[in-house]
Image (cartoon, rainbow, N blue to C red; front, side):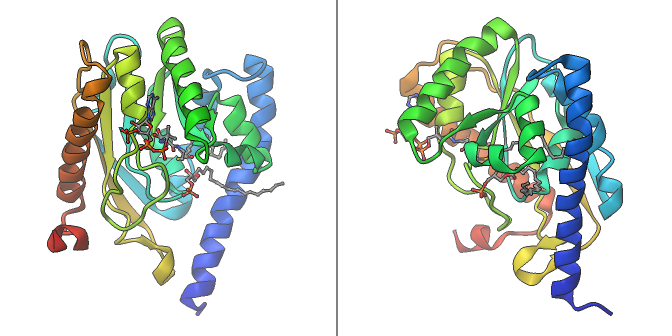
Length: 252
Ligand SMILES: CCCCCCCC/C=C\CCCCCCCC(=O)SCCNC(=O)CCNC(=O)[C@H](O)C(C)(C)COP(=O)(O)OP(=O)(O)OC[C@H]1O[C@@H](n2cnc3c(N)ncnc32)[C@H](O)[C@@H]1OP(=O)(O)O
Ligand SMILES: CCCCCCCC/C=C\CCCCCCCC(=O)OC[C@@H](O)COP(=O)(O)O
């Protein structure tokens, strides 16, 4: 019998190795098929990543995929619990959708390369001014290039079973581009994944794509309200999907 700590470390190491090796093998395919950095590579990356769940005994139960079928661009916002989220992301990712990621991800070797090739938009979280500039540029290009943008509005991983307060960048982006916000909620991983307790077993993840929230006619004055509304809807959904009262819910 391996100790829980060793078992956990092995499983996480295996996940990272899988990512590194698959990226190294997939990057040349992306280059050969699509020639360089483009959102079209996401289809290839998605196909590869969707096989990962079988190695870890993870199952996804997805509802509401029809809510992605809006005409034209949209901002997709979802909760962010762990590095394992890449599996859940690829499970539902619609075509022509890029993600916003921290620029540090560029320096993860082959994983950084595959993320770059997939068209991920890199922001410097330590500089609000430069992050805002990058996102304003994205607001312009998403309409001309007809792409959706996936943002984790918590801005960092959070595996507590609750949501962190939302950053406003995603909602400014939606209002600037006058495109709908589509919330996606993943049930809490806490029953099968908890790094603090060295827990990483098989498990089921419920995913719900919620109806789009329109932003037509909203201005920058409405961004705070839009953010709050989205936060409340997603938090309710998170608790409903996770099927157990979170600590934060009990204490508030
Ligand atoms: C083949 C095998 C492959 C295997 C390997 C797998 C490969 C998979 C491939 C591909 C998947 C790739 C997956 C990538 C995943 C990456 C995940 C991450 O990295 S998550 C971290 C980074 N993401 C974010 O942080 C976004 C969310 N953040 C924001 O949007 C923030 O708002 C940000 C950075 C823009 C600013 O953050 P602030 O910390 O300064 O906080 P604030 O409160 O939001 O803003 C400060 C003030 O600025 C205003 N503001 C913000 N944005 C604005 C804007 N655009 N225009 C005007 N004002 C704005 C706000 O209203 C606020 O002002 P007032 O408090 O309201 O007065
Ligand atoms: C040759 C160089 C070798 C470098 C080795 C790097 C190994 C990296 C291996 C696997 C990483 C797989 C996960 C892929 C994507 C993870 C995206 C992610 O979840 O990033 C975290 C970020 O959202 C939030 O950051 P923080 O919670 O603020 O921190």
